[in-house]
Image 1 (cartoon, one colour):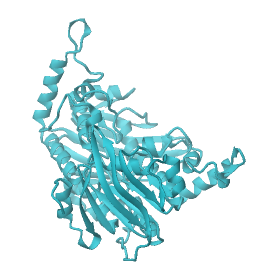
Image 2 (cartoon, helix red, strand yellow; image 1 turned 45 degrees about the horizontal axis):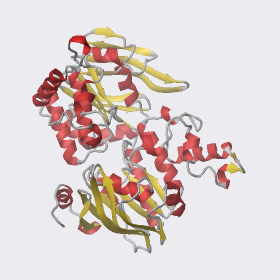
Image 3 (cartoon, one colour; image 1 turned 120 degrees about the vertical axis):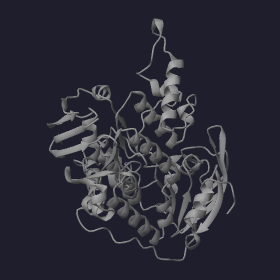
Length: 500
C-alpha cells in the first residue's frame, strides 16, 4: 500500500506545528521520522491517522485521495497506530483487548471468542510473535503491552503501521525482539512509519529517514545516502554536542540508606534490597523492565508502603512517610510515568511547574496563590530547558511527550534537594535534550547532590553512574564501580540470577 502526504500544515492558534510537510511511505519499507521535541513528528503522524485535521494538504493511498473524519476512517483504510502511551484496559485479557470494538459475533450478538482466538493465534504465528492470549494486561511488562498494541493493529488488517517512540522504555533485548517483528512486517510488504529519537536504532533498522525541525521537513532520503552524524546535525540544526565528561571526586556523607527493603509486586515480592547513596554520587540501577524497579522506587518516594525494611533520608526515618513527607525530608523525584504521576495534564504549565511548592512564600500570599510568581517561575523553566509550549498558561495536555518530560525534569531539578531519584529521565526526548539533562544531572552531582538513577537505557546508566547496581527478579544481582563496569557482564546479570 502506497501512502502519500502532500503539503500538510497544522496550526494550533498562533503556533504552526507542521508547515507544508510532504512524506511518502512505500510498501515493504521502514521509514523513520526523526526530529527534536516539538518538531512536528507526532503531529504529522496524527494527521495521517485521522486524529488531527490539517489546515491544508491531502492524503493519498494508492493514488486515491482520502479524507478522514476520525481514526476509524483511517483504520478502515488499513492504517494502524501504536501510540507512545498505550491504550489498553488493565483488567481485561490480551484477547479481550485485541478484539475490543472489533469483536466477531455469533447469532444473537454474542462475541465469538473461539474465532477471535484462532485468528489472533494465526497472526501471532505468521509474524513470529509470542503471546499468551489469556493473561491479564495488568500482569504484562511494558514490552509485552506494546506487543498487544501491535496485535490490535494487525487484527484489524493494517497494511501500514505507525509506531510512536516504540522503544522509549525497552531494554536492548526487548528492542531487538521488536525489531525482529518489524523486519518480518517489512518482508510481508507492510509499510512502517517509525517515530523515534534513537539514532542508533534508525541506522540499524530504517530503509528511509525523514528529518523534521521546527515543523518543517528538512531532509528525506534513503538511509544508504546519509549517516548518523548527518541526521543528528539535521535534527539539531548545527554542530553536535561535545562528549559528556564526568570527573572523579570524593563522595560525602550518606544521604539515602536503604536496609532490607521489600515491596509487593503483582503477587510476588521485590527485594529485599540494601544500598546507600552518598553526597556527590550517582548510583545507577540497571535491569530489564518488570524486575521490581518500579515497586522499589515507589516505596522510596512514598507512593507504596513497604512490606519490610527501613528507609533513612538524611538520618530521618521516612519508611512510613507519605509522598509529602519524603519530599519535605529532601527528595525530588522524576517519575517514569509523566502522564499520570509526573503531571496534571488538564492543569496549566505554571500550575505543574510548582506542584508541591504552591503553598510556599515564593508562590503564595497568605491563603492566595501568587499566580504571577508561578508564571514567572514557569517561564524560567521554559527558557532554561528549551520547552516548546505556547506559554505558562497553556494546558500540559497540549505539549508533546518530550516537552512534558522536560517540564517534569526541570521542575524537580530546580528544587535543588539533597537527593534526586530519576527514573528514565530522558524518556522520549531528543538528542539535544538528552545531552542537556545528562549535563544537568552531572552538574548537580558535582555540587554534592546524591542521585539515584533508574534507567532501562544501559548506555545512560553507564555514562552517568559512579556505581551500578544490577537488579534481577527484584533483588540486587551484582554491583559494579564505574571503572569496572562491563556492558556484557551487566547485560548477563540483567537476565540471570548468577551473582557478580
